[in-house]
Image (cartoon, rainbow, N blue to C red; front, side):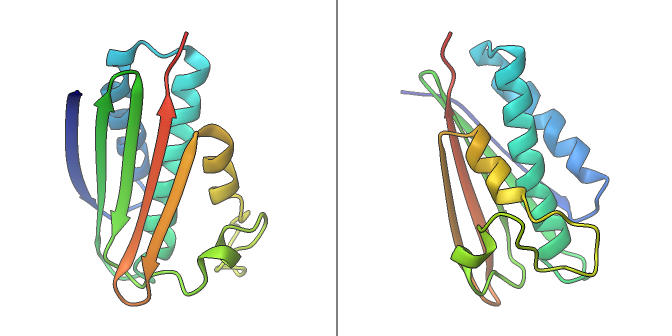
Length: 140
């Protein structure tokens, strides 16, 4: 029942967060989401990509992968990196927790993803990278 799928990779430059938002929006438009749904999806993807860019490689160059699939009225996005990984996923998912307190990060990335998507799953291994899977049903 897979309707469509895509995969793109880009280097972990902050400019590429906008690119990822645009790709996600263009990809999901086939499901005819409302403006609010589209905004929520773009924001969730943006947060996941920003986490990979900011935290994934500790100021080293690396690759971020964005995958998407459409199945019926459901969209799934996976954002992954092969970077440093998250030592404590439960702690990282706590509101206001940030692994970079010296920067102006709010620590709300996972909270925002969870608010805007129906399912958010995080897998990570120290030294191997992180994979964030987000699913949202588009209904009218």
